[in-house]
Length: 82
Image 1 (cartoon, helix red, strand yellow):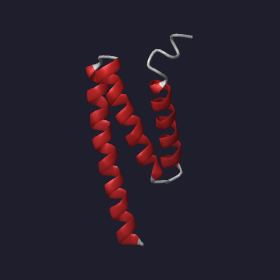
Image 2 (spheres, rainbow, N blue to C red):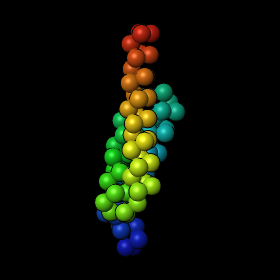
Image 3 (cartoon, rainbow, N blue to C red):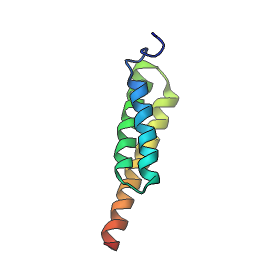
Image 4 (cartoon, rainbow, N blue to C red):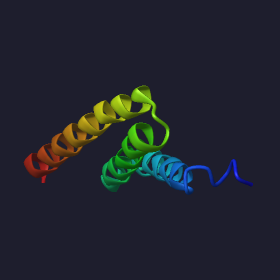
């Protein structure tokens, strides 16, 4: 049981938010970007502070930047079309 609670269930929450984001974006729902951004923030925290993994931390910083860019791009397309 300790294996499942090792990171205070933050890793499970981040994973669940990532899966929710994929589902939402697959349904063309822009809230998927918000879900991904929260998940990325959790992974960044986990990577740098709890897991001591530069790969997880830096990778999710890049993912977070791409999510913000995607959200901005999506809103620009929505505003010009609608």
